[in-house]
Image (cartoon, rainbow, N blue to C red; front, side, top):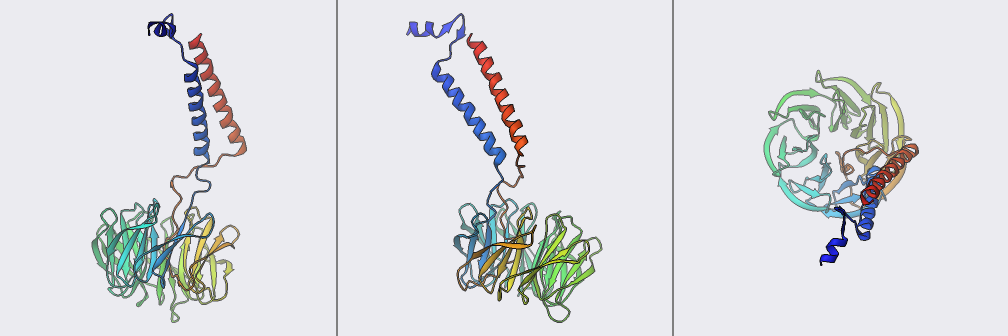
Length: 384
């Protein structure tokens, strides 16, 4: 034992065994690989879509990587609106027939809670901080406010007749509710859970979407009399400042940079793309015959638009740069998906990571090599 101790120290300096030096090298290589993996993270992270089948009482999880159905999750009766939490951890599914909301854990794709709400729920939206969910109850003429931490209803807000869609402002201070039966939008102060004003729009007010810059709200008016249009609301004055004419719009989505407005036209089997600054038509994207699109949802980066087709039980994926369909996911035949809302899961983690260019990769590798060389020189001097 004494000889071992003496041979391990010379002039008060520790001699690092060869096995320890090899371990250090392995740890260094592990750090390098980890840094490279971190730099590359965010390139191909899944932004799965959660699409409710009204006739099959389930939710199809569509992979953004393979554009195929990964799995199906059984929920309540006649699911319609779907909203994914901002952090991507939960998908909230409104079940119109069973008057409740199913909460899906997006990691396990299992239902972790069921929340009772009002009669005939249709639409749902989540606040930007993920703390509240707002559910429109068509038959009750009210909005249920859910605390997502406890999965309980903490308030019920009376609105107009036949509330359909709902969207929350980017700052979380307002919730906009479209009332199908009387062609209005109720504006809710989310701090007090009370309606502060009601705005007249077109007939058959259906889906509603807000711009991320907070200046506009877009309402799809699906009714024939005074409908067939999209009402553009100025959020500062709570007035309609423009009306965009289009055929039987049932769903609407706004690009993350607030420059484009996408409208699903159910009767003409097409998606219209409008310039948000001028309200001019930019493109018309034709869908398959009898598609009957019912819902739209953009990926958080705005690169892809998912179109739910009720008539064909398919989901079209559109490249927003080219306005072309680049993929189609097939759901169970006859599932009759009518999903609307923000049903696409954000990529996890939600923090954006820039992908280095080739020159940046070279600088990263050079830096790692210099750092490794310096560490090796220091280690050699200590061993000398």
